[in-house]
Length: 301
Image 1: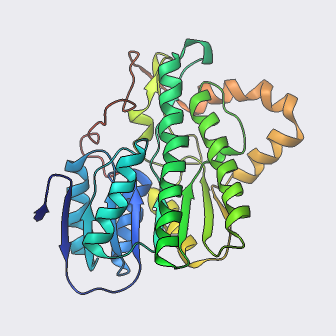
Image 2: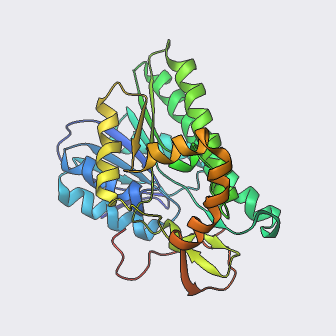
């Protein structure tokens, strides 16, 4: 691997396809999106907080067929770092014409038992981070005079509520609202803004989430494979659709939340405890909110 300074490393062979910056690329949906982009011949800029994981993904992307790959470590909540990442990525692999924003964190607990700094940190990464990436992407596209693509990864809980997950739910409602606002603004300016809303997905976000419940969260059923969600996300780069829901029960849950709110509120907590929380005791911790964590051992997620 060729290292280019402290914050950038890159690999290259012949150029084809799109040039895509992917956030949250060290694990989960972002990692799988990057690999699928590589397999179809796109150049990929990999952004997340942990350089070590990004460099592993970079190797995989290069071997999968990406013509150019680059690692640009950054925290999405840091505006200056995101601006610098876009600039460095463009210098290394060429002008960015598409962005997939998949970075995100979560925290479990009763609202009143979650400290304000934990709640605010989730908003800083998930909401302010999304705004930082979107702003940098649009300005980058404008500067190039091209019609860019921005795909935001939301969640089914951006359309419904979920008990014991208030920081994450609040943040995803904000992401969905921001996406719709950007779509309304950008509709006449030419950039394509789209939103993917998955349900439960087999990724490590649950293992790395902060918890104040005495147990860790887990993906609620039906659980989709990360490859399925990544395929839907990548497809949005070549689609005119503004939104795509991924999850067999997403529309059913959304309908129940809006049409039968009293019933929904009555059954939501028991269902959450039964299907979306692990049984294994876990101490209180802040997960990967303030410092990135390595992927779980032998995890491909």
